[in-house]
Length: 84
Image (cartoon, rainbow, N blue to C red):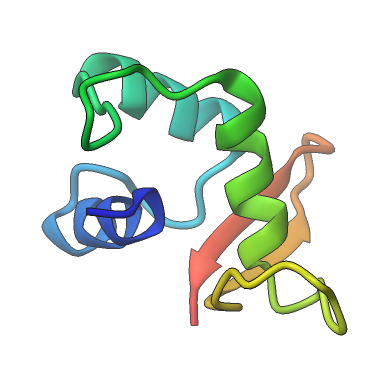
């Protein structure tokens, strides 16, 4: 299952609270032992990229990721993401 689908399912189950930051996502990935279909761990760069590449603000773009996330900078200065 793709990482973005796993993130979506985690938000629906309450395992990942929206809006979430990159750090929240990395913590969830580590705590939940989320890995690629081949069993290899996701690189930090992959986790960073999935959020920016899936953000509706990232249009137009050449990447093929579905644009399913909204985002804004929170009071602490970190970007928060949520599914639209």
